[in-house]
Image (tube, rainbow, N blue to C red; front, side, top):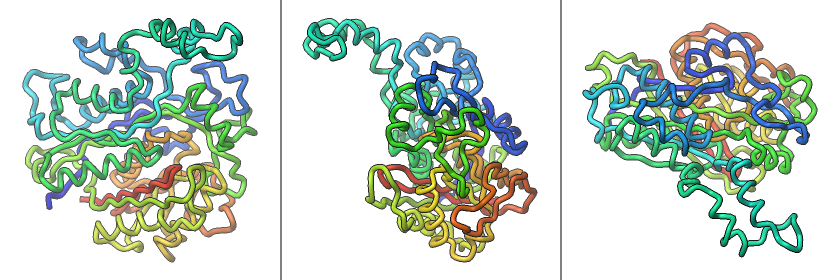
Length: 434
């Protein structure tokens, strides 16, 4: 099978727009978790989150495509900006930048994980107001909605909120005509999308692929859902930098965020022949499903462990060879305990010695945007630096964990990024220095 390498990285995160901005802020120990500014969150118990710094979407698409930005939800914008960053980083010239691309679009795939795209309340609410029940203004009259309410929405309204539109816009902008797919498995979406692109290139069905995921959980609807599930830290509104404490004894819940992390994968010989910058080789991928509960991971972590162990086996590596792990680390005590159990099962004694770098304390929970974590694992390997675990001070349950509040220089040959999602989907990726 073909070897697959990473030749481009695109990141949009609460720490910065662009992979360089994200990485520099990350290793400096900065946090992007702060009070929500995008909308009035004063009525919510949790009023903090990881917001991406301001950007103008028109700056990241060709002039001829700017009209299409009117039907881009926030999630789509994040994916488009991350794709622009990844292409510019890779040295690949798509039709977004030139009339003479330096690749065959028919051999370039696109796999972008997505989540539940929340509708903009101002737009949807105005339409729903016209369909209030005559007997109870707090209820929606479905007959009236069908007659008058729906007509208040623009004909292309739905195209802003379909999860496959992230990949659609990226493929149209860059004229990518290879295998394309959208995966919606919550937090595991990005890793599963990268894994599918990996297999596509390995089999020879494509030479390149842009893959990862994007999602914006920071919306009134997103905040309400997670509040009702009891997953958010509601005690740190005045101290957002300490809100998310992965694997810490004082873990009190997570904070929502938004972001996108996309990798450009390329067949090794092709990348080498064009003199591409090679960040790392993707050598292992595996997925699993625990079928435990919709709202809680399996406390034993067995299925999560299976994904990591199988990814290492796919790479032909042992747990002792892992030099850094970028885990899920949500900062929800029950979830973190389950993840620690899985890491111990998968890695054995190496679970206590392999450096661990949970980054959600600095970004918040990015859900399908967890491709940011996969990209961070690649950057850690490439730069030989382990990002800090800024809020992990007292390991949960007294478990021995190799974490540090400061960035560490290290010889990194193998990096693992692992993730799980509500509903039980797990995935793991293994990267190796070339």
